[in-house]
Amino acid sequence: MAERYVTDEEISAWVDGELGPADRARVQAWLQTHPDDAARASRWAADRDALRVLLGPAADEPVPEALRAAVMRPSVPPRWALAAAAAGLLVAGAVAGGAAVWQWQQQRGAHLEAAATAGWVQRAVFAHSVYVPEPRHAVEVKAQEEHLARWLTRRIEVPVKLFDLSAQGFELVGGRLLPDGAGKSAQLMYQDAQGLRVTVYLRKPEPGAETAFRYEQQGELGMFYWVESGAGYALVGALPRATLLTLAQAIYRQHPGALPPEGTPPPAPPAGKG
Amino acid sequence: MDAPAAFRQQLLESIPRLRRYARSLNFDVSRADDLTQQVLERALSRWQQFDAQREMSVWLLSIAHNAHLDTLRREARMSVTDPAEMQSAQDAAGGDPGTDVGLRIDLLSALARLVPEQREPLLLVCVEQLSYAEVAQVMNIPVGTVMSRVCRARAALRRFLDVGAAAAPTLRRVV
Image (tube, rainbow over all chains, first blue to last red; front, top):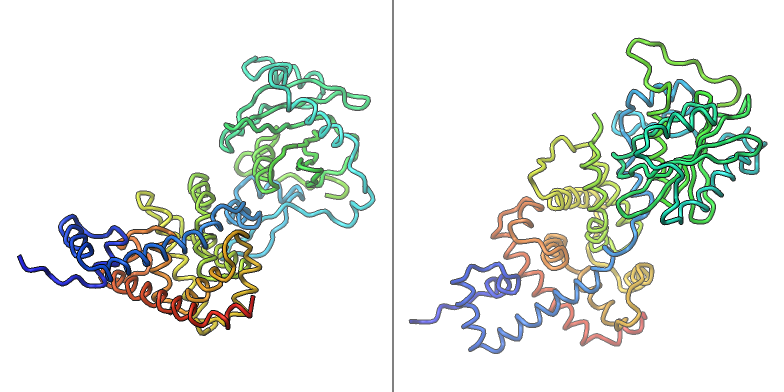
């Protein structure tokens, strides 16, 4: 059988594994008897490998926060966001693609008065770092026990709800009662599939406590904290801000008193700075 | 209506690959991340048009291809980059200190000298490891065209590398 001439394109396709079995066999036979073409194929394969080595590592870099945030940012305000906006916790940000982008209200100048982190938030951070590393005694009462929410509610005199964070990949481990200055607080602990833990600290706020939603970072711990409907919340975790924000929003959506029924006018903004 | 969580999660997982492709088209990290951000925002705004049975990575790469073309047209830039700019881009991008620096510059500058119509399919096949059929989808061209452009790209790349090696003293002086 006369040998068919093999084209450069076929050799190139052969290098990429794009030929069917018959063509592949034909090209291979050709390369075995044509060393110049075989050398070229070999150089092309080496160039391909060099490109992979040179340009591949970008995919192994950690993802910048801004890009992660671009994916997680909501583009249309859901109903709960409208309620939160009315409570003065959200402001409409830049318009993106026609829909307003809602952003949690940034710290205003007035809050510079409270320069140091509020004492109770520090206690929340401390409690987080004390109990999160515990493998067996991380919580006092496990999630399965029915009385957990009722017990904590009675003790801290603030409605305690067992927030559902399963949509964000977090399961409730359980909770505990803690001293909080002169009063008491509740700590709920959640865990994801990788065993990473976040805590939600709840307590009764001082009268006239500031309600503004705030973010802080201390070392590897990030925290969001706010006061809403007569309860102080602090979410603490060693997670990127955007992830914590998603969790904080989920908690906020579920707070007792959230989601007023259809037709109910939104709540009046709280007195004082918000 | 907002893009659902499952879609966003898939999008998050695609970011490293998108960054890699964007970086191979724009050596500068911030330009590459700008392109990636553009792709993510376009994908989010079009989520309802995405057929979940398709490969999301191929869909995203085709958005990237078009976004990159838009940028090129807008800037009407030549694809040839001068070696000095290449060196600073290479420095900025970092890289394995063990690799021969001269070789890296040669490969990057040879790559930069390819016209976009050749550079893109070569990168999609070699680095993103797409099939010719997938490249055809991404670039909206026939498979036969993919095959011939990849072939011409590798021949041109080889030619630039061989020329570069011969002209080595000039490039080395930039290092």
